[in-house]
Image 1: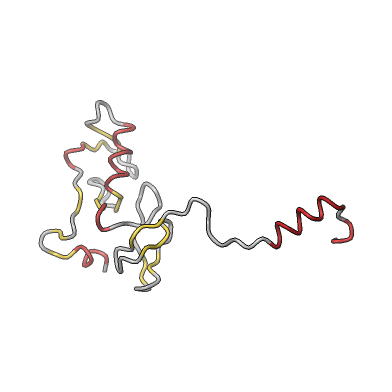
Image 2: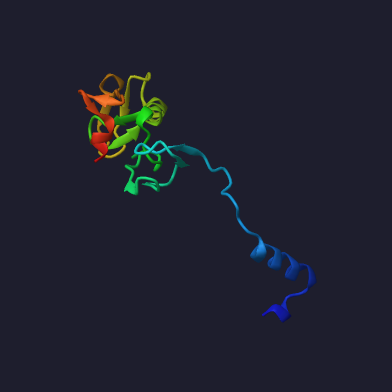
Length: 128
């Protein structure tokens, strides 16, 4: 096949095939809720703790301890900041939105950010 490619096309193909990807474009990092190690947002496993990380129901990104909430209707984990953006983008007068899983109405007053401790329990215990 190499013999069938012509000059400029051959060079482009060879360059593409030989190019080593050293990092992903637009890669953003955030801390693992288990170890605090900075990992890509879309990775759902902590390489240091070797544990699965819960996924945000809205974005597909891994959860972060500082930005954690649970959907009041479905109970699914979500990044608090992303849930607020989602609800404000679809709600009427920024008071009510629709649950992304079941489609039921959710009022912003029922949405609360989970801190590093919840009811006296360390947040990490929720992950186990």
